Length: 464
Image 1 (tube, rainbow, N blue to C red):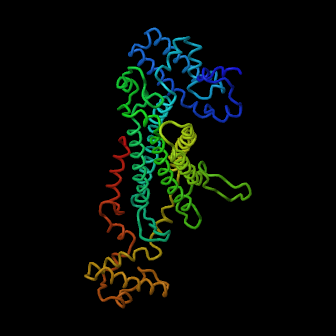
Image 2 (cartoon, helix red, strand yellow; image 1 turned 30 degrees about the vertical axis):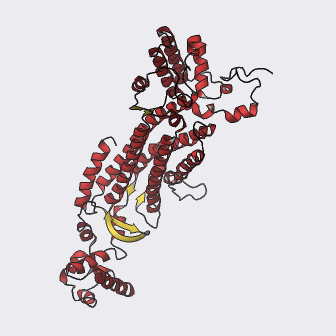
Image 3 (tube, rainbow, N blue to C red; image 1 turned 180 degrees about the vertical axis):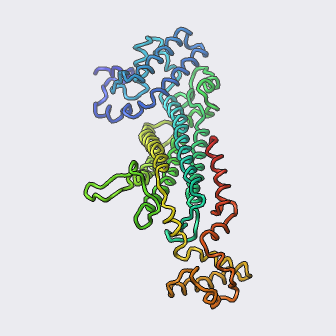
């Protein structure tokens, strides 16, 4: 039988890999995006081998120069990918040997693809989290800008999708700013926990050569060195944490998109999407559809699914590395692409929205929205809240029966339900009065929202 030419395990095997098995096990189609990180790790490993006396200085220099050429080929789109070489690691190594000769054949000394891929993914994650964080900041900044315009603009606040109490538009928008701040902090925490060097762990037991892993960590910009080689090569917590943070972010952005699509309906009429961020109908000429927002909402399903996929893959794996773990990359990369796509389009969509503030103000005063203020009035007059709640509930029932709003009821009508109502009660029933009453920290009074805006601006301006 002929030997498995070109494979890194050719010495052991006497039979060629079945072509269907070769295609099935190959990862080059998706792990090729790790190429530049693989090169950075390989250059650092060459320097570490030289410090350990395992490479001569001229061999190290030849390897680093060859890796620079490989990087240039990748960036120019001229790199000769070979699918039979299975993954990005072997493609880079084989090309490096062609460029740098036998010196490059020494590069894999003391290293395994197990610790190599763990390194590449952590380097990729570091860059990715920075990009996602910037996208979240841009989205927060767009929300803050729109909130600044709408501090004095009332709208209905909702519970159970029923009109509840008046709020200002800015208060609603700032809720998402603070949600996204938690998302930024989650991604940053994920990156901090991933800031541990796995290289030097070998296949599972640690490298058998005296490599200075602390110096290697400094070379690659890691804060720490993995304390257990078996854990280092079999760990994918950093991927799962990223996917978890991505799923939560997707949920937040989906809720924002759900609000906007609902507000854009004729039934609400609170916002209008710019033509630049909407589409039309192929059959109904009058339609303007919020497709961008709907797709943001829909893509949360991908983010959830990717998290569950990797959790399920890792659930029953014995230590250490198993090929099952190759299945982490496509969900990881898909969530990365999905998040970056959403965060690329969302700030522009937010900046282009038209708020129909007159319609929002009108709706804010409908549906007995200041009933809680009427109950609070009675509490200030000495009535326990539960009794005040019941009194106002009967007032609302009366108003419904008579076809009257709260502010249309006379003092005489109100006094049928409680002698505690006085002439000043009319001062608490307006939308503006309801808003002004909620001036506590975190409340919807314009003065409280202005304080929250300052807090939000500070958060957006600094790293998570």
